[in-house]
Image (cartoon, rainbow, N blue to C red; front, side):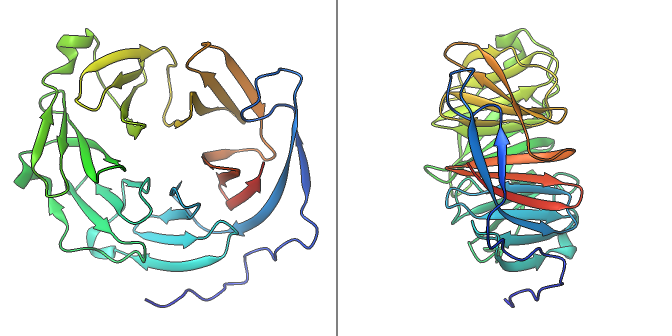
Length: 278
């Protein structure tokens, strides 16, 4: 795989990193506390999405293409999968095993850390999934969670694509009408976003646990005991222990999505990617 050439649009690394003042810390709980974040890198790049892995690498999606950056914002590789079409979602929670989902084709592809496809893309019909709407990884054991729209159920498959868990119809357990749009696993708990009612939480066996009353979301990230999500140009932090919510002003406007990995904050806008140290 060839390393992508610079297109001249990426900003040079700042000799003196620009300091931007937040009125609230990402993690400190005191309302009077503040933090300074440093801009590490800005990269102008066309995009339709972004995610990060547990190693601090960032992946910018542009239709059928992925560009991988390291934590400093250096471009490592670019790969296109035109023959598979537009990428619906990418789960990079395991940086050594990346998951691509193609909803229109009802199939997934597994990549290694060089963005090379491992084996053949998997047609989900062969797994008994006729209408899979959402998919995410279980990063600890390489298993996969699917939300099956046809059965309103959560199904977990091991790394060999053998069914090991089936929640059954979760609408009967939760008593909620479901139209979920995002799903992620964190610390052996599965979080299913249902904009109308909130974030449904399940354990590693697919057993319903509770609903977090944060509604109307398209995306969120779970970090420790916090749920982060965007509201306009602000980053919101919901504390799952105290149930308190906090607004965090961002250094730029019109954010499409974000990610937090350790001390790094990644912000994706219309013009490209910004990487910050907080």
